[in-house]
Amino acid sequence: MLTVISPAKTLDLDPVDAEASAPRFADETDNLVRTARRQGISGLQSLMSISEKLARLNRDRFRDFDIAQSKPAIFAFAGDTYTGLDATTLSADALRQAQGHLRILSGLYGLLRPLDAIRPYRLEMGARLPTRRGRDLYAFWGDALAEALNADAAAAGTETLVNCASREYFAAADRPSLRLRVVTPTFLEDRPGGPKIVSFQAKRARGAMARFLLENRLSDPDDLRGFEAGGYRWQADRSTPDAPVFLRAAEAA
Image 1 (spheres, rainbow, N blue to C red):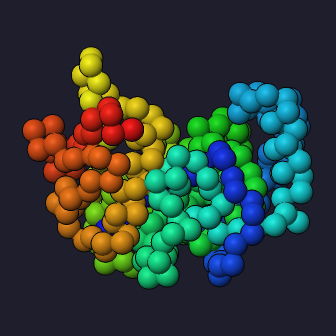
Image 2: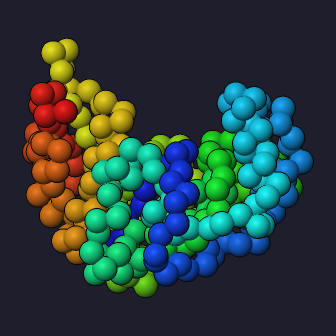
C-alpha cells in the first residue's frame, strides 16, 4: 500500500549522513518561491497568520532559498507526526520501503518521497497564496498531486492509499482524478465525556501507523487492525473497511 502523511512546521536542520533524492516538482517549487518572495514580511505575516518575527524568518528563508542547506524530508520535518514515525531509528530496509511506499504532501514541494532533499521553508497547503493558476495552493497544484499518487501507487503495485495526512493536506490530493481506494484511520482517546480526537496524540499515531506499514510491508488494508502502538486498539464496532477506528485509554498517554 501507499501511505501519505502531512509535513511539519517544525524543522530539524542538523545534517544527517543519508543519500538524498531530488524532488520531482522542482519547477513548481521555484515558481512558488518566487511568488512568496514578493510577499514581503507583512504579506507573509498575513498569509500565514504568524508573528512578525516568524514572518521575518520565513522572508529570509525564501530570499536565501537557492543557497540554503538541504536535508532529506523524512529527517528534516520534526513535528508530532515525525515523533511517531521516528525516522532516525528506521532500518535501512524500512527506509528503502519508505522511498517507494510513503509520500509527504507539501504546500511548497507538492509531493515528496521521504529522501527528497528539501530546504527550510514554511508554507501551509491551506495558504491563500495567489498565483496565475488561482487564488490558493489547491488551485496551484490542481490534479498534479492526485496523478502523481496514481503513478506512484502503480509503481508500488497497489491500488490502495492509506491516508495518514490532515484534512488540510489531503484535500489537495482528494480529487476525482485520484483513482485509488482511500483508507483513512482515526485515532481516538477514551475520555470521561466519551472518545475524542486529541490532536497531538492523533498526529503521533499517524506517524506511528506509517512506520507500522513500512516495517511490516503491509499490502492488505485489513492488516491495519494489528496496529497497537501508543496503546491504541482497533475498534470493530466503530470501524468500516475504509475508516478503521483506533481507541486508547487516556491513562496510556
